[in-house]
Image (cartoon, rainbow, N blue to C red; front, side, top):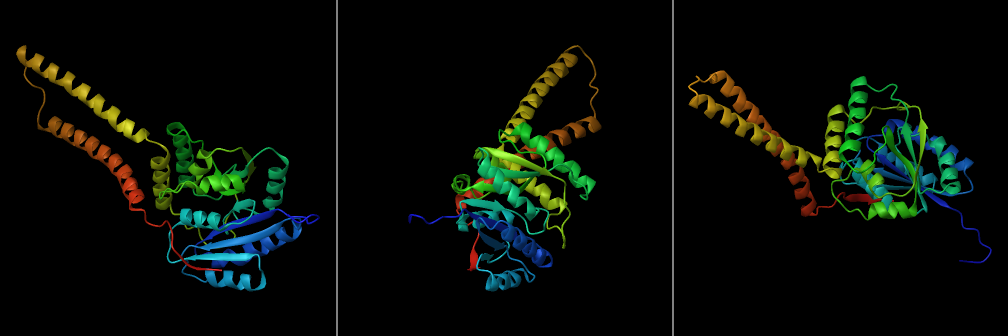
Length: 315
């Protein structure tokens, strides 16, 4: 280190993008205001184009031509947000790293406060959570709250209700996240699993500035399954307990049937009751096999060692 030279903190902002051309100019304009106001630190903006079909990459290149702080990674196809997060974190060079979306639901004006908290308090991460879900479909909100409640009951990893991926982290925490090289990634769970001290910031839900959400109800449902299988083995235990319970019930039933037969009582069971029993037990078996299949499929993908993403172009 050269004596007398002041080395500024560097904040790397990782922005996963998938078909965000409608909102990207608004996002970049807001970031310019923030970077001008926070002139005591250096910035780098890392846009990760996750196989967009619109002009997202073209706009990013346009920003890069006039702003050296702008960098980009372009995937060969759509690999998903989790892959984009991982790639951006690996590419980042700052001692403070921010993860945020481009749709302005993660308000850039909070970066100033997040940086101050991270510098002034004994914490390794400043994360954000929504205190309400105004503007979100009620069905989605209902199932989202049920998911967070379920995850905190069946997993040892604490996931805050309303938590967003929007957070600022110190380099040490990011390095710990990068050391988790698993293929099936669930970032909200990973952030909690690695530990470190986290300061939570709450704010009201903000609607997208433009464009449409890429997360349909079906995609969110599949993503929730990803989180459950990644951070809990309780479904295995549930299937085992159900199996044990049904075995006990069957033994009791056999005893009752034999006893009734010895006492000369006529059977009360007919075709309808037998069909219901068969369908019930078959459903339990298929459900248990489905649980096993979910975990087996995750293991299959892990052992194949395929790359989580492929970068086609970067700049």
